Length: 297
Image (cartoon, rainbow, N blue to C red):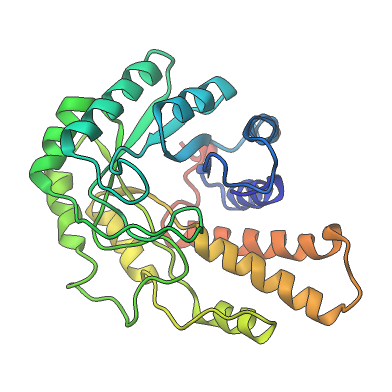
């Protein structure tokens, strides 16, 4: 989530579909000037949804200090992305284990869960210009990594990538290695597997955006059918921010194009929030998330 209105859209989608939900954001990647102000507001917002099971998660924590800051702000889950030494150079397995284990020790002592990453998921998770090459996860290393760190969840690279530019043709089994999910899940059955970079990049939303001034090139994402299938193979958390952002942007651009003199964010922001809520609610149905809140247990 990049602002409070988007978080509200996700929480409203969860409430309307009786879904548990993970609300997540990245340090330094919001419209707000200071992480701590935004994070405090997120904690307050979540408190207004007592009937929705919510995890507040730090996505792609770049350092031990980022994770500590988030835990201090009230996050109930953090990701430490130790797969990269910086934004360009992959970390060694040992370096990844070291920083991840350190975060796990700190977080678990405070009742906070931890997600790690193995392999390298391509693209740019915050929408920036920097981009990472894809390095697929190795099942043997996954087993060793979990044993050495004690992570609760593990993001595994299976060929997906972050951002609005994923595949130049519809992905198949040579690109999306769904077989890796099944094999890794059999090795670490007690660890929740996470699929990052899994937006489907709907063509209809791209067309709307481009019809109103956008310049998104043709690109294919992860099909909804494959994401749904992944939940049967072992994936327990699916990250897909770009679809939500595309829905939001399409609605905002359409409004601004129709109202050539409108400049009030409250006017164009509302249809954006509503469009985001609709697509998130739809995904919750597709992934089997709907109807799984506390009231149904």
